[in-house]
Image (cartoon, rainbow, N blue to C red; front, side, top):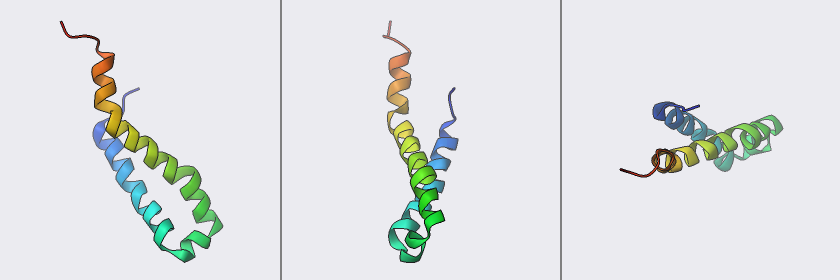
Length: 68
């Protein structure tokens, strides 16, 4: 399944403020529910979207096979 580039970029940009809030806000960092959301949803989503954006074009080129 191929996700559109704009959707992956949007997910990446939507998860980034949650990570920033977790890092820079002691009150949010101490909240167990927010910490769980960041650790188990936002960070993995951000990492996967970042890898997809970074490696996506390279993987798409390699899956097409050699040039004729």
